[in-house]
Length: 555
Image 1 (cartoon, rainbow, N blue to C red):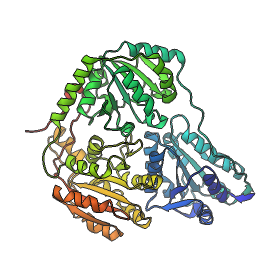
Image 2 (cartoon, helix red, strand yellow):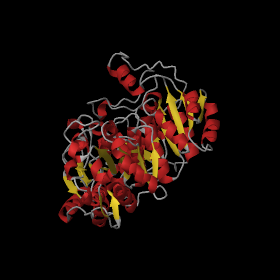
Image 3 (cartoon, helix red, strand yellow):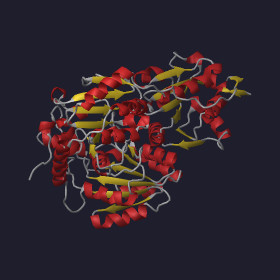
Image 4 (cartoon, rainbow, N blue to C red):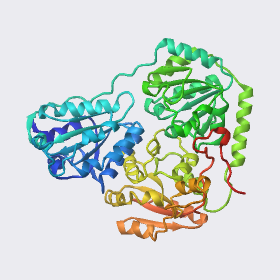
C-alpha cells in the first residue's frame, strides 16, 4: 500500500506491537499527529504537559514492562526538551525510541525557525540516532531503532524525520515486529575459570544490578546463591530484581545502602557481580573497596568490565545464559562461619533502624507497604525520599521499582509513574518530595485528564533535603539556597488540577488517607509533613570507604 511518511511512522509503531505512545505536537511533527488521529483506534497517544514529562512517561512504560517506550516531539525546543529524559534512559539502560520532527530537508543548516541539530545534541546519550533522508528508508529505520533499543544492553535511540519526508509517499509493506539480537553466553573458558574462583570462596557475596532484571535471570541468581551459600545484595538499579523478603537478600548496597549488605560486601572474599557497573556511589574510595575480595564480573556490555574496578575474572555475555552454564560447574557448599557473621551484621542493622514514633519517613513508608503488599509499581523522584523508598519499600515482583539511578533526575517521578501505570494497568504509587514534585507537578493535568490512578505520597520537609543533609554534615551547616520557604498549598493545587488530596501531620491519620487514595479513580495526593532535619542513613561519605560509614548523627 502507498502511504505518506507520517502514516508509515504510525503504521510501523503499530506493527512493532506498541499500544501507547507519549508526546506533544508542534509544527514540524503535525503530519504525524494527523496520522495519529486517523489510527487512534489502534494506537493510544497520551498528550503530556511537557516533552520532558512525555519522555519520562515513555521511560516508565519501558521500565515497568521491558518493552520499548516511544515518545514523539516536534523540532527545536520540543526536541531539546526530550534531552534530559533521553539521558535518564541512557544512564539506566532503558529501551526507548524517540521520534522527532524537523524542518524540511532542504532547510537543514539554514537556521530555519525551530531548527535544531537534535541528532548532534543527543549523540552522546543514545545508542544510535538517525536523520531520515529518504521516505523509502523510513519504515526500516524505525524497525532498526526498535531492534537496537532492545538488543544487548538496552538504551534509547532517536529518529529525526524532516517534514518533507513525512509528506512524501512510498510503498509500505508491514513486517513482523523487530526482535532483539540473539543473546550469547560468556566464553566457556571464562566460565570455567570463574567457577574455579567461586568454588574456592569461603565468604561469597552475590551482587546484582539492573542488568539482571533486563536479562530475566532471577531464578538463576537465586539458584546460584543457594548453591554457594551466599548472601545477595543489589545496586540501586537492582531493586525489585528479587523479592525483598527473600531470606538471603540483604538489600541495597552503596552510599545509602543497607548496613548489612554494604558490610557483607566489604568483608567478602569473592564478589560475584551480575549486571552492575560499580559506580562511585557503590565503591566509595576505589583503592579501599573490597580489598579482601576476588571479583567475578559478568555483564553483557564489555565496556563495563574493568572500567571502575579490576575483576579477577571478567565475563562478557548474557547473564541468564552465562549463569545457566556456570551453575552445573559449582558444587553445593555451606559456609557456617560466614552465615554466623552475616547474622551478626543483620542483627546490628536491626538495632540501628529508626524506631521513633510519629511522622518519620520510615513509618510513612511502612504504612505504604501495608497498602501495596509489595505488589504494585512504586515510582520515585530523586532526593532523600528516593533513598528512603529504596531502603524501606517492599517488592514481591520484578520491575516494580521505577526510579532514576544513573542521572538522578529530579522531576522524573510524575511522568514515570504515569507510564508505569499505563503499561501495567495497575494502580501505581509515586513517592516524591516537595523539591522534586515542583519540577513535574504540571503532569498532574495529564494524570487527571487520562484518569490515571496514582497514589502520590509527597514528603514535604520544606527544604531540598539531600543537599541540606550534605550541607549539615560536610559544609558547616551553610544552608545555601536549600530552604524552599514556599507557600505552596499542594492539596489545593491538586484540586485545582482536578484531582483530590489531603494533608497529613499525624501518623494516626495516614492509614485512612492511604485507604482513600487507593480507592480513588484518578490521582490522589497525600502531603506528609516531615521534619526538615530527617537524614538518610546509613551514609557512605563521598570519597570514603566502608570504614567511614555513618549510621548515626547526633545523640
